[in-house]
Length: 114
Image (cartoon, rainbow, N blue to C red; front, side, top):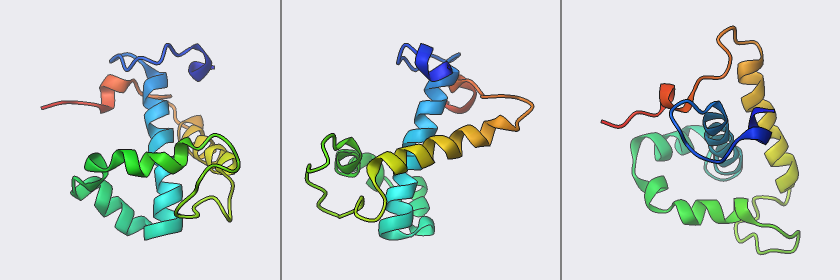
């Protein structure tokens, strides 16, 4: 329900913005961590280097494919469809907070600039 009511703004009090960001990150981890580079290599790329930020458009492209016959140059959706990948990412992120007594944090609780 949070996602359905979300105004798509990343305001400090937005729980939906945080969920969206985590789903986005989990989709990348499923695709590039599990199917291309391996999880530990992907974590290194995203957390310890500027590669992901610099080439995010390249990494996002396969995730934004709309039609089944759109180009998939890395073949990341051959074994598991994009729809199943999205569903897994959503399930993973929602499960993370389902058992949490604190619920979903707000965007501003996690995203800080220094």
